[in-house]
Length: 214
Image 1 (cartoon, helix red, strand yellow):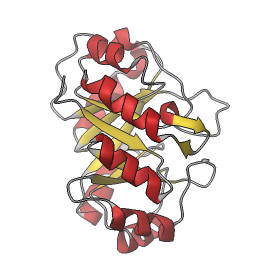
Image 2 (cartoon, one colour):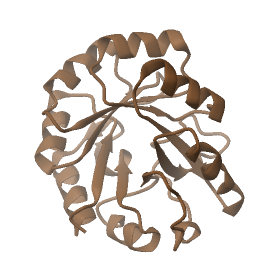
Image 3 (cartoon, one colour):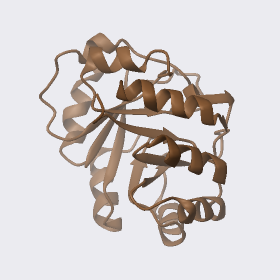
């Protein structure tokens, strides 16, 4: 499973970026969402992104962001991808992709089989898909809640044409099983490699990446 690509999301310190690079992860995610314990300012993200080694894909996670916010982020931070993690419509995804000229990853929340058709809708307009656990109605955060969904819903589904990433409740202990059950070639983790909310643990990052790659 050495070709599995790992995304570590919610980085906020130079040590986080160094740990992600050292572990051999493919993506580094920066969260722009005030309610999240992983939220970073544009200035913080710009400094962190400059530290990232060549080849590490730098991703900005936003939630229902307007053009003004995305303009400010993309002007200041050297990014490789935008991740839309809110209630953005397919039309909005296409608009963002066209406006910024960056690949766009759209998060799709899954709770049961009734949510799966959304994937086909967004696949038409996004460059990548992030298949995540749908947050509970009362949740403050659209992701990073440490919740998993029933991975059996994805078992044997090979018909998505775009690259996709599995997220939601992944940890060093369960990521290999999640990959086995879903056939995912890419995985995303945030809270599963933290010692406290928003505090990344270099040892857990290393363990997660190693477990994902088998």
